[in-house]
Length: 458
Image (cartoon, rainbow, N blue to C red; front, side, top):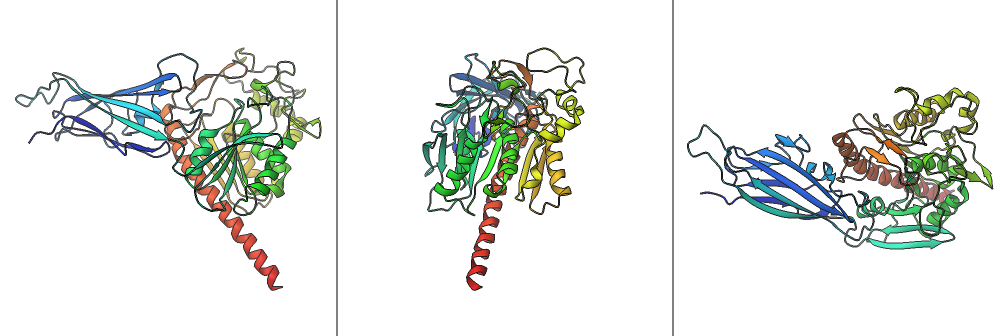
């Protein structure tokens, strides 16, 4: 009995971080079937397309059947999402701005006329179409979203359902600034209380990263410990790119106030303001201050640097790397290195071996190697992805925009990696990070509980 031509996506609704199974049924055996996915992300239309060969049973399973042509070429149902490319140019970004708004994707399957197993009598196909819709949520049922304006702090808090206490994570962006609500909302769906903290390009804050006071983050750590009642008593800190540098810097500066660190594509040194600088300060002005004084950084009068990439000028040779050149000034490199050995807690670094924005794999290895040499006894974990670059994000967002324009300075740069490598790193690291956060908080809670019991027995 023939089966009607149809496309199925199961589940039709799920969290952005969860996978969907996508199948086509009722195709003519050997027919070419093209699937096109369209997603309106903010005001920007994104799309991906791939063509498949139907099996002898008229079925296509996107997790088992690779496309024969199209925007991606591996067996992965989520390829219709991460392989999407921008199809309009209205200036919108790929990451969801408001986690309360679901991401909706329309998928159309079209069987091409005149295809089918040519060695079968009557094996031709007629042109038919079917479609379905997939909804991806960022805000899980029961998760509470609350804007925070406390003691000068600007951010958004996401609290899981239930009584708590919860593992608690401060989530920070990089040199693009803003408030990373998307990542924080998804962590809350998995039982993590996530405080998405803005520190520039957020309401009431500077438009630039230059001269950001570390006292601001000290207040955020105190707020998280005293008001959010984290499991284990202290929050973890996490950040992307400059936020990764910042997370390591906070752990070294305030080691008794941080439970653990998750550093995405980080730097191992304090750097100048670079592409997010206040023009009046320049790329080599300070990023961080402490008690009104600049924190020493690698670009302050660096004797090894005679060029810089934050003015859109090409490097002097294709092998030039300002982050390597800067280390030639050994005294300044030593003074600006983040002294992560001061921190005794667990550290997770996420990096891409093909990071073209800065060498995050090298930085991660330097950080974790330093800890090991200093007898660090807590967990050290390095997720280093071969075909990934600087743009490791949350799962199942488009990973195709490798050439980028910086949102503050307008400078052109490359994130590196491949769309497939970036997509796989984003999916794998997200689930590894949430497990690390739970593990770290639970272990700290066990230690503090054991210490309290021992004290009572003395």
